[in-house]
Image (tube, rainbow, N blue to C red; front, side):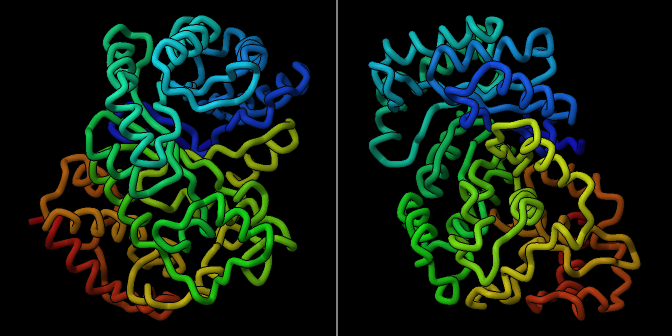
Length: 384
């Protein structure tokens, strides 16, 4: 397993995590098998948003004394009043469900997630309705260690990040979503995938979503990626918006190349599915390469690095995508570099100053990025 820093929390998570959603209503033996496969593969980050008491208890039982070896995202506001899944903003009900989750998982939750903040109304209900204050009290009391939130909207997620309360965000992230126009409802985008109606040739990279990822890295807010496989639709010959389906490895790798992403959380429901996701760790560069799908898009992002690393190998062994990622983030605030970004850049084995200007990277780049000039800019910006 490869482990990455979770924002500025001081913790590290495996780049492959586990979304537990699809284990809801499954028999205990199946839950146990799936969780055992995850733990045996080095998975230490799991999302448990499901409100049902039975599935939570089954997950806790399957973890057993290995509970201490994993970080759990537990959601504040996910309920199943009358046995129906619901997004709840009634503070008393929210407390009842979350405090029962605390009991089930050993008296603490690692990441208490403000649940499903997608709209202005969601934002108001959480921040003006006492739920955010409740999360702060939970953290102060040691019931949760960190505060996060989940969202499917880049604009609303940005608003929450800017409050400073969040240390992580669980966000819907895949290539198909990242080429949807700003403001497109992701439920509609999923329907478009179902109907084969997402016109890739008329789309390009969504700057609003890209700006969110950069802002999160700038602020030290980690991103755990949900929906990286597009609920399986990106893998389907029938539903893919591209000329051919993506693979699991390509979907995972795309998500992991976005700024601030520390873990992808596939929704596995069997041990074999978990092992299939973990196979990413042994996949080669060609098996992970998602750049051919970017080539199908309208090219108004030409000249911008999309962190695909098609430019490698570099004779100076520079991680060119990483340098570009930190350079892009440093540019967000007129070159006022957050200490965490400076630390990450300085942690690279080779930086922009090591560029020998051979030009091999630019010959291989599919998107006409001025790599040599950008290496010079990075050297000047980070080493001044």
